[in-house]
Image (cartoon, rainbow, N blue to C red; front, side, top):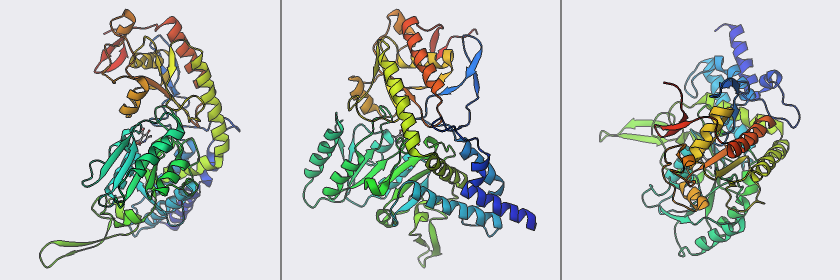
Length: 478
Ligand code: PLP
């Protein structure tokens, strides 16, 4: 590399790491308005003719990338190099970028000085990693209302027992349910872990994390916070909440490049077998006299990061953390509250629409709401929102089957033939529709959504739909 290229690489990577490049080039959001995201001008066809800009209202599944994140990734991409391995200049730059990202994420999460930040693929990956790191004989407590990523990793570990707690109907009941379950544990039982969500991916309701953490600790248990839906919408402060670990995904935090985070206490992680065996996790590997191999594993974060790390994904997460912090969570939370209130008020005025909630209407929520519409199957309703209004929402059970079953008061079943409900052949709502939004959502998307729901409910769909491979799709000419 020439001196000029080398200097350019160094300054570009440093700039990318400090985000000053992107801060200069990315369009700034008007105060109190949406943050610029990719795809905001994408136009989609309408089945009824013409086209419209796409209204992405499925943030709870995956949020669009912040423009700022994309700019930071683009600024770094030419200087991409192997992390931790290479002797070359770009490898060293990339390694610095990767390791600096840990500090950025730790600051974003308000971690304690002794906490570790392990980079994973996603929240699912982070919670599975923690499940693998549970000490022998551990007992896990988890509410049945959790996303499957938080519900399912634990019981597969040999020697680990799991108590599934019934759905509470208020934040206070969540705390007493947990306290009762922990108090009922036999004296001298093994280590205990509580896993709890910060905000529900179905109702958007915010859970009483600080109180649950205090309850867990009062009974000698630890607690992991599933912040997949909380972190993109609300500040998360590990030290202040006093949780032992927190997990979240980049793709829900406006950084859809395949990385996630598990941050928190180091001891269980350092004592556990590496999550994946391979290069990066191993410090030295030697042949033993008996013909086998002896491995000395790392005792830092690297222990659970075997293989070549996703430096672009990690850089993107760090960029998103900086962007949200600089935008100011107070402003973001205040604006999102206004949008939530507008959606709740708008849906409340439409006959036959029922917004799902566990804790009651006064519970604070992030921008995630699920609802049913009398006489409509959710797949039909969601398909009409997409095909006739250019609005992307989600329908189904949202990987939280026990919770949706509780909320709907029925056993979820496969939907019938879509569109048939209007002719009386099918009925009942066995699934729900979910609308979700966040820092990049313009007011117009919310207004279009409310208008669309009202029109569909009062006037019906303007198009015919049929079921194709399990999905409801508009009928089009062959
Ligand atoms: N936890 C919650 C509350 C979620 O909403 C999700 C995804 O929707 C997950 C965990 C799993 O996240 P990921 O699919 O990124 O692993």
